[in-house]
Amino acid sequence: MSMSVQDSAREREGFPRPFPGTPSNVLEQLRLNEKVVVVTGAADGIGLAVAEAMAEAGAHVGMWYNSNDAAIQRSQELASAHNVKTAAYKVDVSDPDQVQEAIAKVVKDFGKMDVFVANAGMAISKGLLETSLDEYQKQMSVNVDGVVFCAKHAGAIFKNQGFGNLIITSSISAHIVNVPVDQPIYNATKAYVTHLGKSLAREWREFARVNVVSPGFFDTKMGAGPDVVDEAYRMSALGRQGHVKEIKGLYLYLASNASSYMTGSDLLIDGGYVLP
Ligand SMILES: NC(=O)c1ccc[n+]([C@@H]2O[C@H](COP(=O)([O-])OP(=O)(O)OC[C@H]3O[C@@H](n4cnc5c(N)ncnc54)[C@H](OP(=O)(O)O)[C@@H]3O)[C@@H](O)[C@H]2O)c1
Image (cartoon, rainbow, N blue to C red; front, side, top):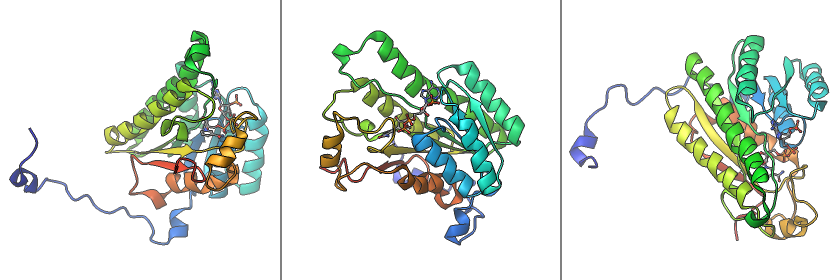
């Protein structure tokens, strides 16, 4: 039964909680000096842009990759360009043991983990009737299992530390049935992680924030392919795909103290794609 007005008017011990001791200057709030950030799928595309943003703001960055070992050189370049510590880790996020070991290694190497960006993903854009069970399982293993494994092991660290911040890369495909190519499994994997993120924001309310980013089409390997690109231009109010430099500020905001009152949010960044 829901609470009566009298019940809900009763004072609860410990509330209201104190405001955080963060600076009031917004540019200081955005600085990540001495924070440790892990980004999955960091060799290229959105993940690389996020890793750059974090290093540019002063964070130490663990860059996870799966097959693209360009992450190793890119992590070295970021370290020397921004005078931060970086390291590249080869991790298949669909393997729970690799995820657990890599998170333990990050904490050993950097001493803590402030932010985890669960960004790795993949798509096999086909209708369900054309999708084999292996193709279904593959998408589930990276986009769903991978995020769950990362969240589970990162969350355990956050709980131990008493602080943490999880950011999940979802998609507009969690909000809309994307057109013109049918891709129900990809869409559903992204809807799963969006709701997972919101649910974890409540579960972890005592020690960590959790937010979700839902990009529209960005010009990466997973961006609009030849068969959908014209529709992507037409659907986007801005008439184009996003450049990855245009997503850096959002992840920085979520990773930083500037977003200290934000948890459980799902932020669209799509050039107005889902408006019509
Ligand atoms: N670009 C878009 O239009 C768009 C729109 C909405 C959402 N997204 C989402 O944004 C995220 C990043 O995609 P992107 O656009 O930047 O494309 P991308 O450059 O192809 O990035 C995908 C990343 O996921 C990693 N990955 C794939 N399978 C993995 C596995 N088993 N273990 C670990 N990492 C794995 C890849 O790592 P390796 O290359 O090292 O194998 C790659 O770095 C994805 O979650 C995607 O669904 C993209």
